[in-house]
Length: 106
Length: 184
Image (tube, rainbow over all chains, first blue to last red; front, side):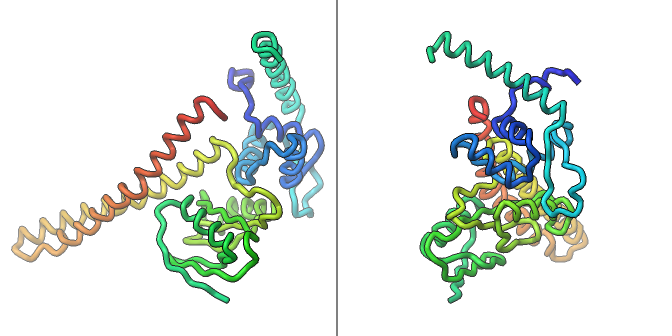
């Protein structure tokens, strides 16, 4: 499980999808949420989002919300594994920011 | 009112640009078949158009799931070609509409198209070679080698696909890969 790629940098799309899914959300909700979170800077393409969702499902970082069989829109939520991945990423980002401020100045 | 425009594109992004320029001028695409575009009058700039090659035919379950997902995000399936090329549009009022927003997913899409082009090129090469062999055989029994002439058509198509489809697309892929070394 703990191979090196597991803790490599996440893409911006994946990072924001994982953040969004701390609340159960369907695809379009994720897109809207990310746009809002980033102040309109990150507008995820639907195809990009779809591919990322499938990859994250395969990795077990997110899962479908159960009991939504009759709902047309599938909802997803982050798993414990996904949450630990986000924590790792936060540590990595903190390091980047700390070094950046130290060397290049905030 | 309907407007018919006959036009051929070798590059789907140039085709998208054409559709969006038409839309900006008040002509919204409603149908496409081989090199034939049908437009209807619409308010100027009502839609943004995007074209995508699916990994599976439209009626395949994976494609159906994907198309439903696209629909949920407000994209409308306008028309399709060969069950693989999909023409989407979304109201411009809903904001920027792109299907792929990062380099990796764009590369995936380009590579999917590249495989299709190579399949078409390979098929022509194969048919050409078979005809060449048949031509050689008919010539050896002193009949006119019609197959040899037919093979020339296949070889020409092969070269055209290489020059106008594969090489330009390869350039785009290379460009994105260079970009990927410094950007996501």
